[in-house]
Length: 431
Image (cartoon, rainbow, N blue to C red):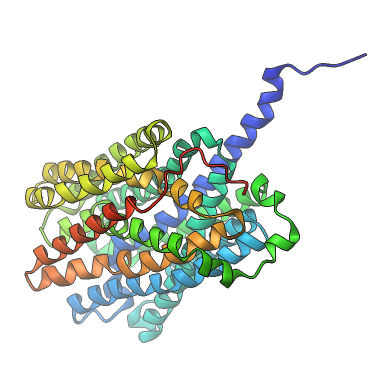
């Protein structure tokens, strides 16, 4: 007796696999972004706990400096986890990265105070951020390479939006948690122990993501590579693809700085520099990020129709044009923060939605993870990691306009870089 399988029944396992891919990739990526978002958001509370509280300004700048130092480890993480991803597998790289990130969160959550152990508290924070930086340097290139290789090529732009969608949901969760804790706890309680809660939650979420990723499948593109191809020396390949590496840096520099400004530190900046109520600033940020998440898939679908380059240009040029007007709009009112963040994030979303696909489409399979990971991590470390510190420093010397000019110049460079890349829409990633 012959048994036939209906098309619907045959499609069911594929749909299940797709959902596992999306959830497993998304939750790990969300945890990474949640980690550095809560650091930026809760820094004003734990700065005086992990550094000397005798000089609050110095403690805050030291905390932001460690935020930047954590990014120093990213290029090393990009190379290490990129090497694992290109030699052992995308799945192994993703799983190890999220496990290490969770451990870093745990260290911060249980760190002793400066009053109790002196500089050892600051050192523990530094070590934890370096661990997280190492993990975060490997997380994004591993997850976006995995996702791009698993996606149908005609929908790769749409699938790629999961990276910033899940990442922003991680930021949104951290911001919402900060708003809730700010409403429930007194300032003294937040400084004493409330700031530890989000880091401990991050450690738990990271453990869950690790378990999810351990059960995922390897990509077909990686499995098709022969053993000899996987063992091909890495450095000669990196040298051969130095142009693509430079393009990754060029496309990223404007995006990473403006995203950190408007998507991560804007509520903290509004509360500290502009004296806006912290709770109002956090909820205004939540509203803007919901809009950001909503427009990401629209930009992704548009890129699958008209191509990657037009959408990248809209994002870079639009962000550059509106940066100064939205900065001038932002004063001390929550509605101003909501409007300025929303306008900027809509344009930032155009680039953010599809760069994971563009990065993957620039490189061949044998070097796709490390080829993206190293230049991306270097760029984020140099430009994104220093953005909060530079913004705070320029504001402290009454030269905020200098920092805004710097951001617009980087966006202009990213726009020019778009013209140097090929149109990669619909490219076959199995080569």
